[in-house]
Image 1 (cartoon, one colour):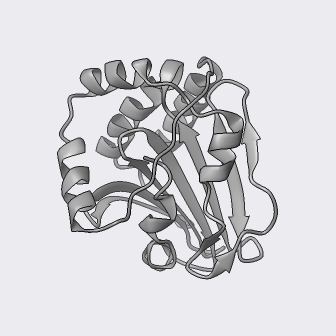
Image 2 (cartoon, helix red, strand yellow):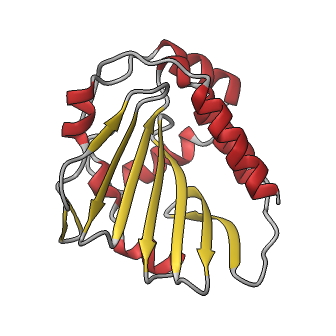
Amino acid sequence: MKRIILILALIVFISSCGNGSKKADSSAVNDTQIEQTEKESSINPEDLKELLSQAIPLTETEFKNAFPTSIKGLPLDGEVSITNAKCKQGYATYGNENITLSIYDCAGECSGMATMFGTVYSIKAQDNDDTKYSNQKRDAIKTTNTYRVKRNQSDIVFLHNNRWYVVIKGNNMNPDELWNAFELNALKNFK
């Protein structure tokens, strides 16, 4: 029930955001990035919101070009879809829809979405017969995990570089298998 309320809050928040344009960089995932991630996770939520509110969102072209063309050998199934409704979101599938990657740009007017992740992470939803929830650090990154047992489907949500709200979904895998099938280096262009 808590998870449903949080998802509804996320939807309401997304529909109240605005949009804009700009900026992408690249970096490799290594020990330095993990250390940086640990430092970033200690940023005060209000300071983070202020920093992101001043950041300029990527243009649609920059956002589309930042998406990986493959994830651990699984090729991009088609084109990256970008929605500009309120908060800019990119969406792509890989390996015959085996993995789905959704990324929200939390820059500009959508800065509250990044701080909301901290709230979601601090709440543990109640498991039921079909759905198991967990919040854990994976490679020093705070993640929320949802596993639909009967369908063998998983979702992992995390905040990348304190700006990008990332949702990865996997078919026929549990959260550990999904995390292992995903590579953080695929997000190198989302700086």
